[in-house]
Image (cartoon, rainbow, N blue to C red; front, side, top):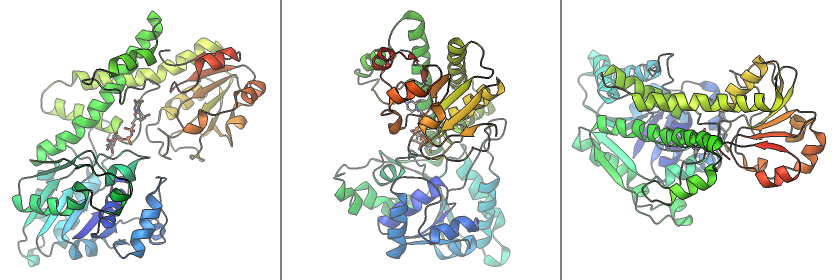
Length: 447
Ligand code: UGA
């Protein structure tokens, strides 16, 4: 099928690559010239394991194209995916400027029946909004063109995006048009039946559930899913804080809870809290929607509050260990909001680094992939070249991101080079018994 994907961020790029890989003809369009230039050379502008190989493979096979001519791509294709960002405004309300711009451009470029698919996470009611804007912008001399709108949220996780897109846990299609639903089913057929090279190689012979619903329910499935996952983490973090007070161990508590299949053991890792480009934005947006529609968002607001507190808890632990923070050297391990990504948006590292610097510490941050100071981090931070560069002469080492390589650090060496052997494990991935045995003053979260 002939597909256009507008926006080559995480969602757009992965969607485009995935649809090309299963055999469709995909044009990914973005007004950002430097990004498109990179992509045309087969280079991936984001760090996402496996993605670059699929980009070059599909360019070579002729299934994937990139262009800055967004209007041209709209005109030549039948199914148009909107994958532009909807960043939060200070109120929590998503900023729909890019989305509205794209809807206007689609209206102006229409030259026949098209299915318009909202793939990015968009506020409840956006399907109707997009339809209205497109219709208002259809140029008079184009005549009246039929369009159908579909909500088709994406559920991929950064760092595991290729697998999540190729083998999703469900495909959700929300539309008021039976014709559009039938086309979308056809588009997703290879994925639903897992009948393509990647699926066969990875033995993913599972059948993917497809959910057909109205556009509003589809939009809410996305928000409610992310908000529920964030709730699970905030809940377990609150329990972890209780563990610390009563002398329980969160690892055993979550294990015991998770064996109840109604609870499950996923997304139950206590730590410094959730971050990234999705959970913070989406929980705030859903709370905003609830309030906008006059229904309380008590749980959602508490979920955000607990998460903010969790970052502060780590700073508080540092104060307990060091007394005053001023003039201390603190090594922060991990800048990305989670492993296997270079994304630092709303990362817990940003909050703690800035707070330590504000309190007068010298902060040396190391990340296996992030090598530049993120835009919202105080420029006084020193980006270290290695764990050992960060830890040398440090009074405290704070592990913020659960990168695998931090599990296998040489703690004999670290003990030798640190000024004081203080460790805060913000992800509970280190061996407390081993570190304590080596003479480290170790604090985890809820253990
Ligand atoms: C999240 C969802 O998991 C995806 O399903 C969704 O498609 C995506 O948002 C989106 O809306 O685009 P992502 O933000 O990539 O994906 O990252 P997650 O793996 O969900 O992690 C989010 C945060 O929760 C990270 O900061 C992670 O460290 C934290 N986390 C996760 C915990 O603190 N504990 C856990 O047990 C799990």
